[in-house]
Length: 118
Image 1 (cartoon, helix red, strand yellow):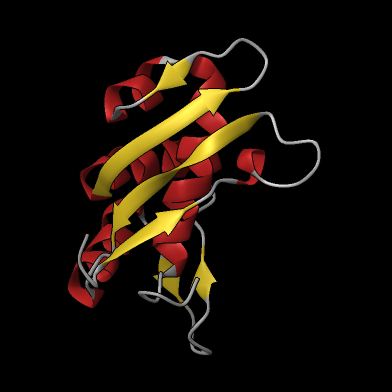
Image 2 (cartoon, rainbow, N blue to C red):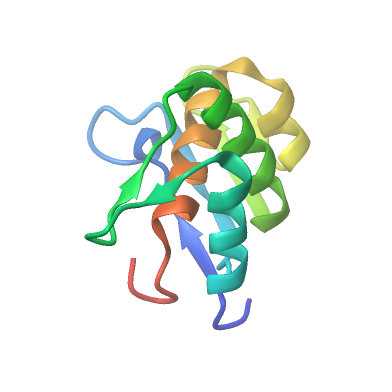
């Protein structure tokens, strides 16, 4: 791992009622990559510097998730209910129960990650 990666524990892996254990490791996008990501999914920045999302939320979410795959360095998740382990981006892509994790991580990338500060 280098200083431009970030280990993230999804919400489902936290707290007393967690349903998974584990984490994902992400490469932190540069400002150029982040702005490019925003432009490709139709996000605007208003005059106050705040992100404004497009009206077509489902399409935006799909595009955001698709653009986020390249930032994953490692996937290490385990379902506590049945013990199934997930260790790849392909697992995130093809197991419907992991959609919320992919969505959560993609929004994290959109909002910006500060290396070592999250």
